[in-house]
Length: 183
Figure 1 (cartoon, rainbow, N blue to C red):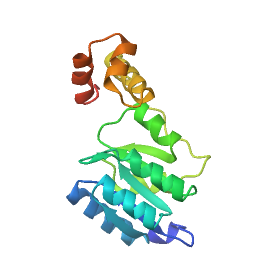
Figure 2: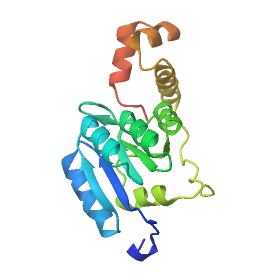
Figure 3: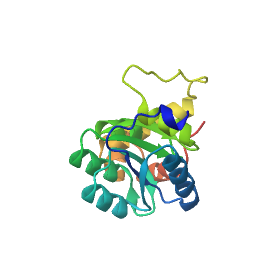
Figure 4: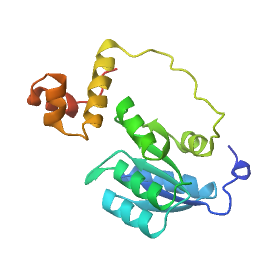
């Protein structure tokens, strides 16, 4: 996508929240070249402070940060600026967290690695654009993992309550939650 094709409107502000310094610096440079006014935050605390002080028109937030959950930043952005277009970006893709992100104001959810073009396409997409269907359906292990993640989110990320509702031992659930999603 050429720089001139982007219609960023009157406010090209973009907040990038990610604790992977190399990734966020590369992405910031790429987005600046495309006309965005980029601000970078490396933690939930920095992201919340930036969103509170200067609510951005656009944002890309990593889900898992060293000091917490990127969804907390998405909530602040949505409270301060409901028209903001927010993308949640993560290496830990799960339907439950995607649903949670959309419920609190994100417009899309992308798995890492996502390049600047993927992110721009998601940020600039209109309501009529639909993503392509998946090439491969989920495995049975993945469906089970997704169900556990959904119940975990519905229980406000309370491990004990989730384990009780799923009728499983709390430590077993903790081990499942600590692993990456199955293919």
